[in-house]
Length: 381
Image 1 (spheres, rainbow, N blue to C red):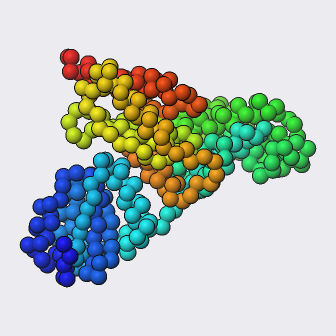
Image 2: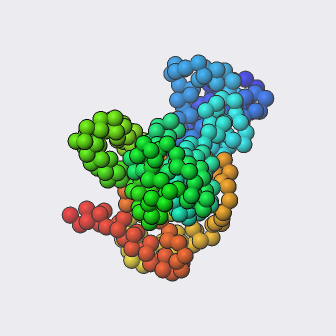
Image 3: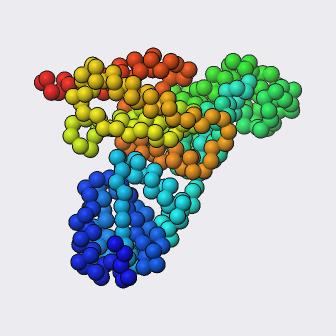
């Protein structure tokens, strides 16, 4: 339904289009008089969101300008809010609508990379994670805060931060951090690889949401330094605790976005009593289905759903090794952020590596039973 003038001025046509909008999640598109796409948006409830652009007083200059330019609108329903988020991101990157200023340019967020394939791994901050066998934590919001936290962990646990390859490390000249007591100096063979690895694993617990164990270690070192009147060291350790808490306290990275985002996530269904299941493989959404609790509580039906979810995951392509393109990384960040908002601990299930599909289906069936059990108890009460 094209219009040669602003849709806002054609009251009859505008009201007709607004009445046709569904009460469902999806994306909406606005076009100008020339037919150019000028804006893409998403909403959990399309009717309410799109109506807000044309009713009442415009809340900002951008809305006032859009009202004058929108000549046509259309929409596309999706099965869930997450699908709408991903579709919006893809459309904005493809068409570059001029009113989508915030989403047009992809800005990768920082991650922490740890390569346990090395004898003496490091904590590295990167904005370009890859499928290279390393472990990644993130994404994090602030690179400055993350770098300060990583530096604090390096000092507190005496980890190396040099960029020398592990195989060339031993025999290399020690740096100033060894003299200051903030590096265990594996280059001088003063620490065994196994002991050093345990220190790195301790640091990684902070990025897994278990930073208190690291803070306890630093706290004890700070107290010992104060007892020995080493006030400068104690002050540095106190600052380290603050940095670790700042970067990890609210982060609690849900999953390694590159290696582990192959899973089933469960959220309350929008329609009726049930759950909505999302199946991901290598960070991509491959299935979204709402399942009533009645089907999850029936053993035979639940087994069928377990098989269906496993088949959806197994039939999706494994993206393999190599660099992650910016579009996929953007979608991984969208999925990760959405899951942190919508799911709670224990509300997702990771697909095990190198397991037969039958065994995976049995394990997933048990997890589905756990998701339905609390509601079954409530219904019986």
